[in-house]
Length: 292
Image (cartoon, rainbow, N blue to C red; front, side):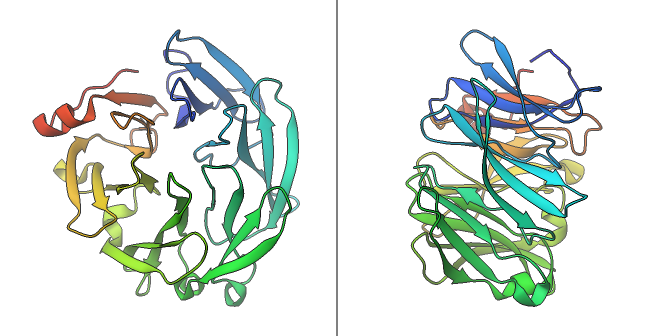
């Protein structure tokens, strides 16, 4: 997009891959504007949302008609989830979380389950909660002792809704560990870990559409530049993709597996949304091709 360049962030592909949602921070609006961009026509439509603090990915529901957003209310010490109709902008209250919260949860791609961390005082932390969105029935499915040590974990659900991937600070927050567990509950299996300074520039963790790999951004490129890595969930060594750009963050993989969208605002001094196409060819030649 060429509109409001320098103010755009947090892109996220719709389930049909034909639209891209992102946030645009515009003066005088009072909060970020949610923009729905048509890949086919370039048409953009604004969806006003409640004020959002540090916007992350838009969480699309599988029908592509509504999304989850998180609103920050500092006077109430609350984070609140809303389901937002992308056509009308209507907000439906989902739930609120008292601050502080220990990390970011996710919605399963089938739209049935909300996963989040137990919050409150550090001694109360350490659990992952599964909540049925329709019935609001909750149950704790896993414990994560590392949460009590500090740092901010991130949770994301596999494309088939069967597995949870977790990035979490470990060993006195010296390392960032990637772990995997069944979404129905079970033990976490560690895939790998990286020195925490390599991952401090982003909070990324995303699945490839085939569910075979996780994507994470590390500061391992030239002169510490952000670089995209692929982690096989079946086991094996982390793999460089050959994609690197200053400030790369908040990566979202297109359903076709050949395109990604990402934010380059955090280290680059501005907020921009980029789309990178034909990833295998770009990775092979180690060339970065983008379109604003």
